[in-house]
Image (cartoon, rainbow, N blue to C red; front, side, top):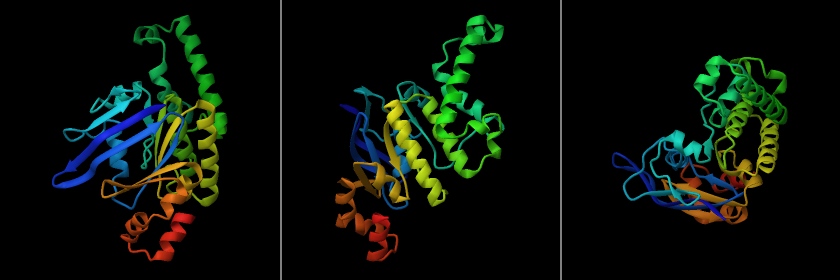
Length: 266
């Protein structure tokens, strides 16, 4: 069943077309990869989907059949689409647990007054939320750091916390913007296992952009390839990595044929 669709999605910055008439369809429970060379428009695509950037006239974005084009970001999150960022945006002076609870805030069932007066219902709800977030921290392997400030975590642990906080929002669709950036090969493998375990546990639809092509090649059945904001290929990992247009796009990064094929097959 179709969960996300874009029609003629476009975004210009001055005279530069960062995204150019992009039609994109995503089915429920799919794990989709979006790849492309530097400057191909991957992060801009995510920023348009989540309302951070406003689209050009004529663009349309549908989530579960509802037109969400240019809705405010918090309203899009409320409708079930969340994301992580390539540059980590954690609350570094808050604890790991508190970061997780911030992610869950959309689902809190009590209001401001109840919170101020600390009613029995409020205390019970806060206890339930803390227990649920602690359980999620166990799942992503950060339970031992629950009461540590986020700033004290390693880069790999911060990536996991960013992923966990996004999952705490209980999204229907989770957009992962280069989740493996800066990680060692061992930590990349660990992150992949956790991502796929979370996806299975919460039945979340995933869209992943990544420069480490192993991440999308091993997790995604379908991959969309962008170059200069235009979709140049779409298909299985095997189809994509053997597509001449994809190889030529990566050659634009001044790699030779062998380097491109090694990268696409790694």
